[in-house]
Length: 491
Ligand SMILES: *[C@@H]1O[C@H](CO)[C@@H](O)[C@H](O)[C@H]1NC(C)=O
Ligand SMILES: *[C@@H]1O[C@H](CO)[C@@H](O)[C@H](O)[C@H]1NC(C)=O
Ligand SMILES: *[C@@H]1O[C@H](CO)[C@@H](O)[C@H](O)[C@H]1NC(C)=O
Image (cartoon, rainbow, N blue to C red):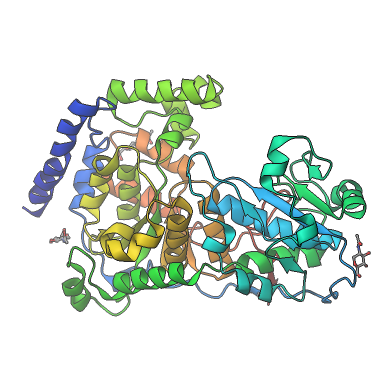
């Protein structure tokens, strides 16, 4: 009675949450919503590695990284002044802003000042560019493309974030439209550079178009994203330690070593990363029902009202309509079922790349029951190792990004900037990435009588072409998410 055992364990996992809820009243213990599927998933067979191509790396698809400039125009003899940008958003939005800033400086023949990273109101991390990225590597890799300075020379040292925050200033460019063209910068920013010697562009997120730019500029953006931006040594060292523990054992739970020995060669030392963003912000914004009952619904509606004053489009739809449209974030339980259906068995080493999960461990426990060898930064690294990044959302996100890039399979269950950045970066390196089919999953989870075998078949069929196959960028799409053909060459 293997299944029965697991079942008891699951109920046991959920018990503490019931008590918790009584105290906090935020929501009721989120009970599993797909009990029948869950029961079957817990009894699933261990997949014979020989029968599954799940862990086999992607075959060569005929595309390779290609970021060198086509004719390598030389640095301008006389730079046109200094470009400063102030970047908001989380780490991955800032990353795109950095790439765009290099491109804009190149378009204007200006010298770029190392971008200033704003403190995000949600993430609250004041880490600077140099705290996160290896700044000397950044400057060195781009030295033949543009000139970059860490700080403004003394004559311009007045041009600070505080200076622009306190009054209207002639050198502040405030009006860059979303996805502005190269010409927009030449017409609106170049004159400021020529008259004042400096231009500070803010806001700057998403302020450079993806279409109608010279191929050299596109390639330069790729070069920044995929070559120039590497994390500082202590992030890479922590990332390497985590990757090695995932591959070769000694996770905090001590379970890895014995399992490792029993493994067949195809699977030996392999691990998958699951990126899961399921925070209160996202849960509230989606306006979906996540099974936490009336208390949760109320709490999320209240949060929605406070933050967006009813301006949330989704709240006009019923939960069923939203699910059919694939507009509800998958819950950890649903992600667990998805992974189980795809053939990940209970000996899968799964790294959870996640910041804060709304509902905490109670919400994750179902997923953990399906994947007992699930690890994360906390379970794999000591508090001493984590001290430098403790409480710093951007540094923690950087560690997750690094581990994600080194995984054999990456699954992102949460659309957003981190998802886009990693999907793009892994495409660039031809690494396996599973992109959940949200609309399909939304629909099949609505069928409360679906059998495990029908569920599994629908999931497998619906993800046949979502495992890292190259998709060419379409007009208006981001080259950071779809690096082919701009950053890659065919053949
Ligand atoms: C995995 O599942 C198999 C069969 O369903 C079971 O025998 C085994 O104990 C499970 N392993 C873990 C680590 O839960
Ligand atoms: C930038 O420099 C290049 C090469 O020196 C030149 O062709 C181009 O016109 C310059 N652009 C601007 C905006 O100064
Ligand atoms: C729901 O699942 C059952 C059992 O797997 C299946 O027979 C039925 O066709 C499904 N219903 C819909 C609407 O897809």
